[in-house]
Length: 114
Length: 119
Image 1 (tube, rainbow over the protein chains, first blue to last red):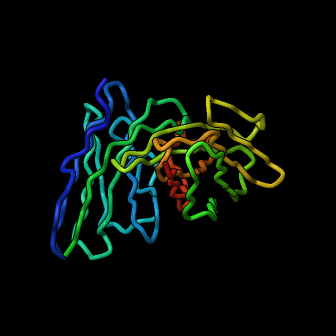
Image 2 (image 1 turned 90 degrees about the horizontal axis):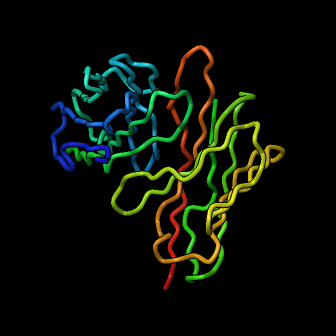
């Protein structure tokens, strides 16, 4: 069973640019969550999608957005990049059972903003 | 607001020693879930265990054991007879239970404990 796949794995952008990250969940998983991991702030919840609807959202500015497609694949977008957006962005998928917390994570997309 | 504290930033032990990772949490919810995840160098987080707030039984899984004490808001993780493969960053996490919102995968993570097992 293939795991959670995130692309690209590494990318470098400059301030002001925008970036789109992609996540393919495990087959059959309908919930996709996104987390940002930085040395200073640790792991922080960005948002969660289920059946193409955003079900929960963290405390991030509107520059961070996401969406989920009918095949459960998800993308997140960050516009007007800032230096502080440099981070490892982790995607996780899970079955649609409530509150399982049994998230299956991808290896992440490491974004560097110069 | 929820908060998870992992006071131990880094721990190093010699192989075969036992090691305990501490986790203290704060929440106003009466129903909540606690988790431990492992993050190896490759980056992905690996789910280890989930415990709900009504289940205070300790759990043992092979060399791993967990001690949940609601009275002290702690959910500690012990590795017995540590091995080099246990070297990783370990995260404790907390989630609230939302009756009104079917499904909630929003986790509040601690800052993690980097565990190094010395051969």
